Structure formats: C-alpha cells, structure tokens
Amino acid sequence: MSGTTQKTVTITLDGTNRKLTVPLMHGTAGADVFDIRKLYGELGVFTYDPGYGATASCESKITYIDGDVGILQYRGYPIEQLADHSNFLEVCYLLLNGELPNAVQAAEFNKGVMHHTMLHEQIRSFYNGFRRDAHPMAVMCGVVGALSAFYHDSLDINDPESRRISAFRLVAKLPTIAAWAYKYTIGQPFMYPRNDLTYAENFLYMFHGVPTEEYKVNPVLSKAMDLIMILHADHEQNASTSTVRLAGSTGANPFACIAAGIASLWGPAHGGANEAVLKMLADIGHVDNIPDFLSEVKDKNNHAKLMGFGHRVYKNYDPRAKIIQQACHDVLHELGIEGDPLLDLAMALEKIALTDPYFVDRKLYPNVDFYSGIILKAMGFPTSMFTALFALSRTVGWITQWQELIEDPEQRIGRPRQIYTGPAERDYVPVDKRA
Image 1 (cartoon, rainbow, N blue to C red):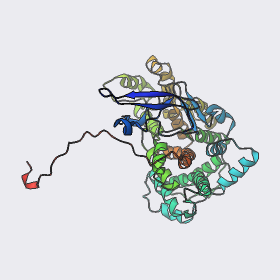
Image 2: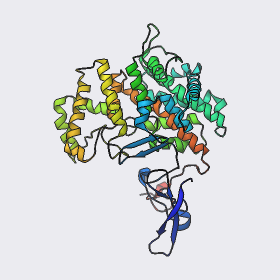
Image 3: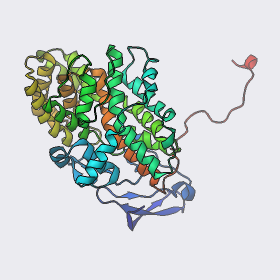
C-alpha cells in the first residue's frame, strides 16, 4: 500500500504469550488503519465486524468522506465546487482519470461518450421479454448484464483499452437503458439518443419526449438533472460499490459487475431511500398529521421512521443535501408548483424537523435522499424510476472503482470470514431412527 508505516500496533492474545505487531497505515486524510492481514496466520483469530463499519477493504484514491464534519470530495475536489462549476461529464472524466480535463481532453471525452449512446438494435427485442409492469430496476439489471453478450470486443479485463471502451459504453448507454425501461412500462415508443444534446438533456429528451412532437428541454430542469448526477456519481465504499468490487475481484466482466451493483442499489436501505421518502409522505397524508407522526418516530416502542433524515456515514449535515436543497426550490419555482399536497407536506416536515430539538440534538438533518425524492417527483419522474436514476448516476463511480480494483496488485478475490454458531459435529441418523 502507498500509506506510510511509521507507527505500529501490537495485538496481544490474553492468556497466552502470543502477540503480533502490525503496521499502522496513514492515508492522505481520514482515520489511520492497522494492517491485520497476518492476524489469522500469526494468532489464529479473525476480526468480527458486521457491516464492515470499522474495516477498510481496499486502498482508494477516488472519493474521500468525513462524515463527522460533512465533507465529500472527488479526487480531492470538494463536492460544493464541482456542483457550482463543473458538469457531469467533466466529473466522469475526473473520476475515471484522476484529474480535471483541459478543453481538448474534455471535448474528446464528451465525443467519446456520446459516440456510444446507442444500444445494439437487437437489445430492443430484449425488452419485449419483460412484463409491461416490470420494475425499471429489474429491467436494468437484466439489460446491463446482457450487454456482455453484445460487446465481446471489450471483455478482456486485463487490457487497458478494453477497460476504457467498457467505461465509455457503460456511462453512455445507461441513460438510454433507463429511459427505455420507463418507455416500455408505459407503452410509448423508444426515443433514440441525440448526441447534439448534453448528457442530462439527452436523458430528459429520451425519457419525456415522443416522436409526434418536438421536445424542448427546460434548462433549469436539465441543470437540476446534471446536478443530481454529480451528487450521486460516487460515494466511497458503500454497499453497491462494495458489491461491484467483490464481483470484480472474481475476474467477472465489467457489465456483470455493474449489473451486480444495480441489484445491490435496489434495496430500500440504499438506493431506494428516496422512494421510501415519498412513501413516508404519502403515509403521513397531510400537514396536520406531522406532529402525530413525529411523536411516533420519537416513541422507542414504535417502528415509525423519519426517512430521508440522518445518514450511515454523515453524522453532520449531508453536504449533498445543502446543494440539492436550493436546486429543489429552484425547480419548484420554475415549474410553478404550488398547492401540491405531497410537496407542501415535504417542505413542512423539513421545516419542523430542522427546528425540533429531538432531531437537531441527534444530528438527524435532511439528507440527499429527502430532497432528491421531492425534486424528481416535481420533474415528472414516477417513484419507480428514482432508484434507476440513482443507478444511472452512480455507474461512473462503480466503473471507476472497478478499474481501480483491477489495477491494484494487492487486491485478491473477496472472501469474508465468519463466526460459526451452528451445531457442533454430529453423526447422521437414518430416517427410521429419528425421533
């Protein structure tokens, strides 16, 4: 690893004279870690860390998070600066290449991505195999996994050029795949991509447009869409990213690994959180019901949860929430949305929760999922598409993490250990002699 090893940690096994000294490693920022790879071989014991909350599974140069103070950086750049000054494809270049592009590099990269926006025409027929009411995430899992059956020329994971082309294809084709998943469920014709539009504009065109009339992309909405994509592009070693890396450690092709990431993201505790926010608001029903709902949340014996508030990593305000909050209000103003009961309810809940000492003392601030659910609903996306849009945005992070894994000589096939608590060894009893 690249971290320095100036200090060590000594682990002593109580009741024995056995001890192990391991290096204490330092990254560019964040907590130090000690290397326990020799722990089992030297002491015969493993560590126990359900959820891997205190375990570093890899060394990474991509994303840094300090949840205690609310910091998120891509390749060292604060998310606030990227949100204000960058665009999604430039962020894609940054994640994939480590540096921001100059003007020539940006133009070449944009052209390279947009060159791959179309899907193989036979994939149109693939959609017909799904039921019309299939969830978009089910469709995306299947179609993304099937890409490996159509693009054999870029499956050599040991070839840098194959990895580069696969990255282009995945970033370029996910908007088309996601938009077509939606069009299929509502029975509208598929809209082919337009490479004269920006990345966000093209997605909105394919999603909302129809062949019978011209679709003009609203610049406020396209800016909001681009911002949502930037904010969700990567988030360190979360569940779906760890899934991609674990699949990648086996040597699986990138399309299969990203399909695995999409499946992991589908869970309501991960990518489905913004969809859960809208469900919670629907359950509350009316502004007048907020006090009773918050009382239920505070009741230890009640299972009610305040969705969209707090975060597994951020123990302070989610920096992405601060950014998207303003975009949310900009979109609502642009669309002239007033009097929508669900959105009015969300704004009222936000105001109350931000001033309620119970939630303030516990640092349960609105996170990015709270605002993204509201903004996506206002932009005309059904809740079933929320997680699909998350997957579209996160693909570049997944493929970047996958590439880093493949290029890391210290990475091995993932193989977590366990504490076995089942029956001890016992003998087989014939069925006619069992009690």
